[in-house]
Image (cartoon, rainbow, N blue to C red):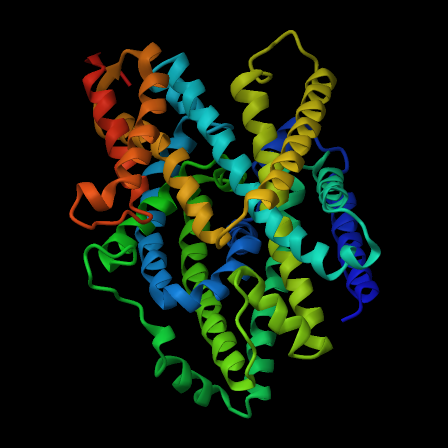
Length: 485
């Protein structure tokens, strides 16, 4: 595909998003920005969350990851199902009962000021890195296939992408994102299915023939039984449970969309519906990954060193112009939801959890809006800087790096919420930041020396669970009198 055609597609798609923004963001208030006036249809939220949770990472990195991890990621996905059930039956009722806008306000009610700020800080840290990883993946593809041809530097490409997201989320926030996610999820899923069809067609097979080839290959291996392997199926399953809980249930971005539903019942219907769709979509993404490797073998195409580049190389260079166009639209569709939602949730958390604009009675609505605008722009600048830095240090599959970082940054959140929900103890609040700091450091040490310390054992995504357990244990040591909450 010619760079000009890719650029035109990108601009047309962006114009569609701005039209939706114009329709949804008129007369938007702070309440509309933060929780969509609690009027979002649950089925729209459920469907749109697929695009937000999958993002460019899943869309592009997971297919390439199949070459080494095979279908083992499906065990993580099965774990997600149990994690989402916990969110729907335990966390959502809590958030709705307390009428929260920021979910980290619970920690202040339960433990105190420093616990609250610690939880909010770890979300800001986690989401900043996570969103940057996701956006990097997409911007890097646009850089390689479009902007390099015009000798435009990577930093300027990131700047353009961030500015576009900033503009269409500036006023409407969640009220706008609920509807843009709907469009973007649709295009992402269409791109996935069309690409699979084009691969099958070029290999001269039918659907049943491709299914047979995939499941007779080593790529379809789901269960690894070696206990000391990173892909050990029990580790993958348990990791999936807790990844879902922390990266969805304890994540302001994902819960902000759920809290925009009209009622708890609607939010729960949204979560269960989303779970079913998510399992099917992840299976098709893994199936696409196996199909890409089989197609490459069939055509004699070398696999790139960075497997994140595998899908775009096949789609754009080897499947014809239609596949390239479809891939690009799918990638953009997968990227925008994670980027716009992240920027909105970061703005929400910092405005409420650190600036406390919802509690400051002396501020007029217009003053609160101005503060929110400044915070929104500030986080856009931070994301730009992190994305540029990430390109310099990137050295492995983004999906792997994303979950590794999540293990360190979401672990303290897991421990805090678990202690709050499953015990009746209070804690010595001022010491909570210390526990939350040392827990990831201990995990890093144990992970780095796990082979020597634990007879060849290698930590995978279960590092998140260990981090949560250490935080929980530290809070238990700091326990004080029984809680009234």
